[in-house]
Image 1 (cartoon, rainbow, N blue to C red):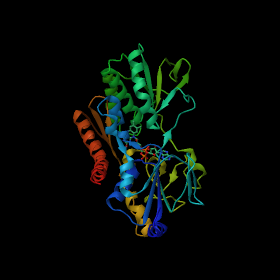
Image 2 (cartoon, protein in one colour):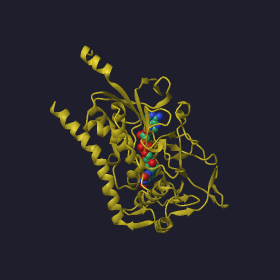
Image 3 (tube, helix red, strand yellow):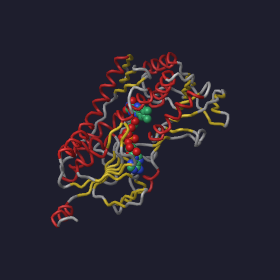
Image 4 (cartoon, rainbow, N blue to C red):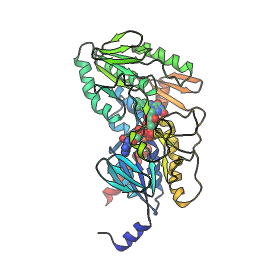
Length: 387
Ligand SMILES: Cc1cc2nc3c(=O)[nH]c(=O)nc-3n(C[C@H](O)[C@H](O)[C@H](O)COP(=O)(O)OP(=O)(O)OC[C@H]3O[C@@H](n4cnc5c(N)ncnc54)[C@H](O)[C@@H]3O)c2cc1C
């Protein structure tokens, strides 16, 4: 039972609800753990206990990492703050009443809300089928992968197609082809995409194309539609495949559409450079779920991570009525794209490079990112053992 003083304290506390444990919210949790805010009561709604770091997922598929290396346990981060971890999924937001409803039936009232729920895979109608594995949510791919690898080993001439020529599609194709080769599966990966890395410089596209050829991945510069016999490419080719993996771009979650929040035409939450909703000042959003004023702003982990640092400042600052900070995205971001074996391609504006040293660089950045969140788990574990 709560003491009277506890109840009184809670009465004066503001309830900060975080929806989604994405890249930006990791920074918020870390900041609150380092600098506790006595005026805040925190709840995190997340469908999974662990947040998977997409930057390392291709490395896991390729066999370079254990799954645990690529996942951050959210519980220690929330426990350190004294917050509540709600293993559930937000399904409805009522901004008039400041209420969130979850799939599991919980209703939470908030004073301050932050949304970092990422995006969903946009499946074109021509390939939508329950047999197509979408990369988002990542948990689906993680669950399916061991079985998929087994099938590739057992089925003679197993064919897998990755649809989508963005960073995710390209990295997945490289990782899977490498895994097949390492696991002695006589299997073939096809990459089906009209263009390779359309947002990157021609030098990067050339490097990727060359590396695809070296890796033995067949790139089909085409769109595709799914038929019972396999994929029919727009270039008139029938591609019989056993498995289709869709990395066909992002779409906004539908539950946001009835929220009353200002959304862009694609359904993403419109925010200002402080990552504050344009319609509701007590709601913030970051990562793939938000829509920034800059027309060239892409959906990427890089932006989610940088915006997280600003969000970590702005959420307490909003309550304290002190100035908010802005996230000013750089003209171009650095992308380090893993190419299966322990090699990678760097892309930064017009600059590109590739080799084993780029992979070491990427590995160092990724491991350092993960380490920040592991140290909190370790500290908590140590303090629990002392009790
Ligand atoms: C294979 C792959 C490779 C990639 N490579 C790169 C790269 O090299 N560089 C780069 O910048 N980007 C890359 N990306 C893109 C990058 O992963 C995304 O842009 C990034 O993950 C977005 O981060 P986020 O924090 O917005 O969302 P996420 O990382 O998707 O996190 C969102 C979280 O919210 C949870 N959630 C979703 N809905 C709800 C709900 N209703 N209620 C509660 N919780 C919810 C999800 O389960 C998830 O844990 C890659 C993506 C993939 C799949």
